[in-house]
Length: 312
Ligand code: MLT
Image 1: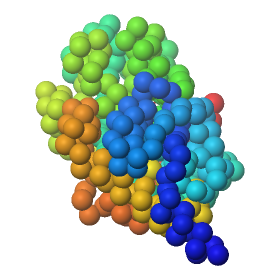
Image 2: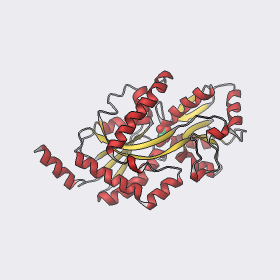
Image 3: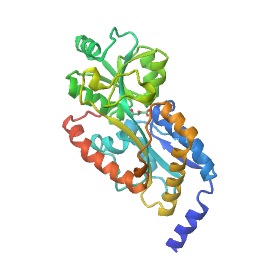
Image 4: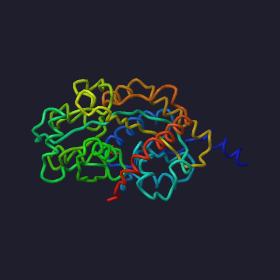
């Protein structure tokens, strides 16, 4: 019966709206990517694809909500290097990021970008680092909470520069960016996709991207290697998961709708304009995301645990 039920589930799936839980505030990079994809996925799936922002604790509240939802494909967990890797080394999550979730598909990625409020009198990364070191109290860095991508990037930045930052946690880097533009915080090590609009508008200063090559749609911003922090490389990738136990055929249907969205020219144009890079064509299966996540856990957990990140 279960097998029959499984087959029936996939044939009729979806028969009502699907919800993508984004574990950060509206207006941030995760939210932006999810909404761009959802717009196209609803065409392929033939049902509404809703985005629900469930925020807090570096994204772990929203992921927990998705983990505990029925394993029927109607609730999808949007996440990334922060939520589906780093959070496991920072929090006692009450769920397991690998065994309590089924991978659906790897999504686009982007390097981080080192940005500051406009008032900082620096026009290069070297000058910015000198300014940070000269501050009488710890400079403030906006994050999306302990364990978020922007927080882990900040910890990495501290370890490379020796600068001590005062983290200011928000429910996403959308609200953090509002405060950066207003000059309320000094900096963010942000997802490029979140900062690129404000950089182009001249509202914040950008110093470097954390990659060995420049971002095509922001080619005037140097790499960390060019700007004097060689090796400070961090690519933040995103992905979609569903609760463990979701029927394989339903996972396959969600994977197909996601891959279709990633292949849609209008979607690609929107994402690439944000500085996002498409996932490799040979990494688009659910299994590829599963392997990717496990490899990233092995890569990042030692650094995060060694930094013994405080959960504020
Ligand atoms: C993060 O810093 O983890 C995310 O960029 C936050 C967000 O997407 O709002």
